[in-house]
Length: 425
Ligand SMILES: [Zn+2]
Image 1: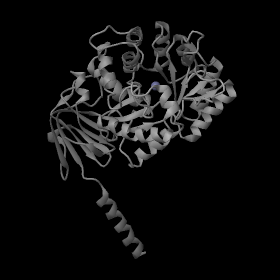
Image 2 (image 1 turned 180 degrees about the horizontal axis):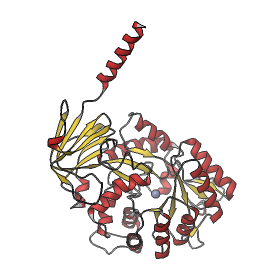
Image 3 (image 1 turned 45 degrees about the vertical axis):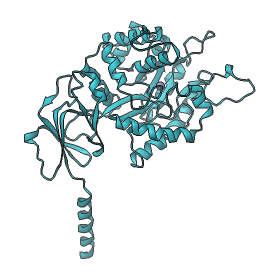
């Protein structure tokens, strides 16, 4: 008995010795993301282990034994989130999407993804929702694990494995190839309720946190965007995903795909460029969140549409994205921050925040979208997305005040994830 007690005491002291030194952040101001109000001047944040211990006026924080990190001129904010990312892709002006899917091996793509995950964390993005590996199978599950196990640095990942698409409704488009050739696809193809439901169950078994579905794509005879799944197929996939505790994200660029997805009970709509006012109102009514991916539209317009920032007018695609964003804002839709990064450079996620402000959000509103709103969409409003005692210590400091000038969200000087300092001044 005595030996057992000694062993227990030793184990306890070992645990105590392993506990990280508390950290006290002393910036110029703290923005907690509780609301769209201004930051608190003269506040600090105390971190113990991987949690926020206290937030408030620095004088009232117990700094005993703490490492003090001075951050003059900086604003401390919650770690940023981007809920529409593709770590398994890299910018289309480096290699076309078709070439990445057809000519880059999944192994090569994962090696790239590890570097891209670090670049994302460096930029202050501590959480991503990965919306499809685009032909790289379930490698996002392995990536998530390697980050969670601290094998490589990167953001917290919520993963989907492959998107689910209607047969023949995605890419690389088979019509562009010899019909005798077997063309690998960028997503999992299904037809009919049985196959659709099976795909949801297979992905859940493989480790998907969310299910991603394409409700429309460029499948019209003229290449126009048309709805792909029937109402019944969508409904069946949503029912099975939800009953397993997995929310559903839906790619929909056109109004009919959006409408069917909303009626099927999905949780988020991605892109929505062609949505009508009635459809955005329906989204608001049903509590479906919107991820506008404005930077994806700008990027593809730059690569392929002759758009030159500051020189040419916005392309029709960019105008459609702007129109949709403004309609969603006016209709009271929950708008989260999701950029479609991967189409453009990993680590440049904050470009989306700049577009959101350009199209009518206040800087603080855009910052809320990338913190508290995104956390709520993930169902993690009780431990992520705000600076609050008891929340996980995902914390960033930026030079300047991003609630006044959104460009400051790019000037990251400190990144802490899960209580671990990843980047310091
Ligand atoms: Zn995407």
